[in-house]
Amino acid sequence: MEPLLRIERANKHYEGTRALVDVSFSVLPGEVHALMGENGAGKSTLSKIIAGAELADSADICWRGERVQIASPMAAQRLGIGIVFQELDVFPNLSIAENIVIGNLQMERRAYVNWRELIAFTKPFLDQVGLTAGPRTRVGDLRTGERQLVAIARALSFEANLILMDEPTSSLPEDAVERLFSVIRRLKANGVSIVYVSHKMKEIFEIADRVTVLRDGATIGTRRTQETTIEEIIAMMVGRELAARPERERVEPGEVLLRVERLKTEKIRDVSFDLRRGEILGIAGLVGAGRSELGAALFGLDRIEAGTIRLEGREIRPKSARDALEAGIGLLPEDRKLEGLMMQMSVGENTTMASLGRFQKFGFLRRRAEAGAAEPVHRRMRLKAASNSIDVGSLSGGNQQKVLFSKWLLKNPAVLFLDDPTRGIDIGAKQDIYAIMEELAREGKGILFVSSELPELLDNCHRILVLCEGRSTGILDAHSATQEQIMALATMQERAA
Image (tube, rainbow, N blue to C red):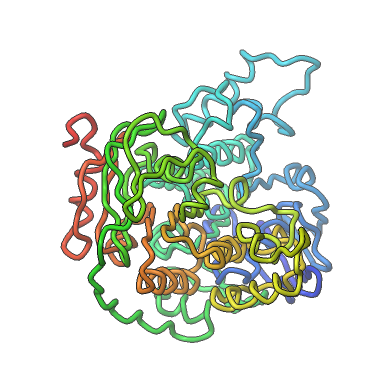
């Protein structure tokens, strides 16, 4: 069968870093082709080149058997290529409908906005992905998972023959993932090809026909999913068999470090829990349950209306991020691009941003001391970056996350709220983050760990706090809890105890 898309000898470098080295890749009509590799392997770079968002240094690209150049996203759209980026390229100040039709060749250009026409055009695509918010809703008012659905709906609206999906389920709850898979199967049945970038092995083996693995910017090989195993794919990704993670020694947490009682904000209604020294307390719940909102309250981003927060026995009421930092609370946000990093600033500047007071003398920054402090935490996180001086925006998504984590390792707060820190992270990097969490716990820190993946919570936490509609509905011992028990508490709604 003639490939819909074939790429040969694709090369790309960024400021001395070789992102792609003679990469070869092809997609057949009507297939779901997974693209896998560790963070920094070149997956997103290859996807952006196919979608016209990046230009390769050199590449032979054939579309339906004819050699083409994809010089821009508009050129890709004309060919019939759409993309859902891992770092969502939505406009928060525009409505859902405007985000879907902007630059869309399927919509006729007019001198004025015809809302009736916009709504009629966009509503079927919103229904396809299961987004209940109205087309005129401002995207900035949506949660991260809902924004991801908007990006997917936009790609569907292009009537593309090939859709690239870069970590499309990273912010979606289970029901939305199943809905997305149904959409993908329907597109496949209609002859549409999907390039599916993900680190989630279960998804790859459920939805993909073939999988291509990249490592260090080079193509390692392509396998049919029915003829390979998870172990083989992991070995291709990391260049070796990934050793089984040793069973974690269960260290008994110490005295109460953080006590939250009847906490209430505009977005959460009644949350109570204790966090002990050396404890990793998981936070579970469906989208909209209040997981991220709890972090925003503790970090002074949302106004506290009622309830108390006691850290090391003293009552605090953070009204800003500065207040929270001074009290000893850090927040690693869910959306690193919009809320965590300064994308045009360097790796080093992002790392030291929360700790600048340590490097000042007479009002001047001591750059050598700043660089000397950043390097050890970068090594600890196994960060892959050509230097500390390059823009953090030029790194892969996974390495951006490691920079964000490095910022808090350097700041060293007593309590660290991690909001889905392994989203979009490969298997090896996940193991690194789990190990860092355990190190911090052994040092007596308190870790609040939000995750959408229940097995991840069960494997890494001492206890799990479950939220539903802004209320705490129960706390389970992670050693004996089951996914079914967590989901039962996560869906209690007004029956919450």
